[in-house]
Image (cartoon, rainbow, N blue to C red; front, side):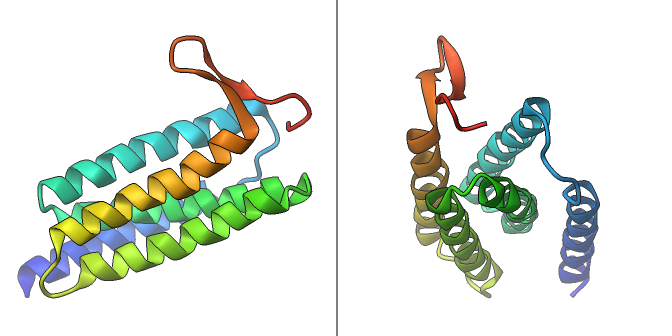
Length: 147
């Protein structure tokens, strides 16, 4: 019970911090880049936490990813990019499902890892493939006309 209380407290503090930080609107390329770096870090930490069975830590990363996606949604809606908004909505659903998996009494680690991989590939990967160009060596940028 004590462990549950501690993990719940940590998750609530993380959620409050994410909400406070994520209230802003993306208006510059620097803000967008910062949010994308936050997503990359949270996604990496999510996968690492699941791999080491640190499920409370994984759920904290889900909170960060969820808030970041909610910040991205109006960014893409303002640009009338319905497919990007769809990627985000599907990503939020995937995160909710993964969060439920991680909250179970007995966590199926393989299912959680598969769900995390699906989130990264079908949410992040789909949007990146559609709206950016470049690679890890040359750097990534938006395709012309997106930002």
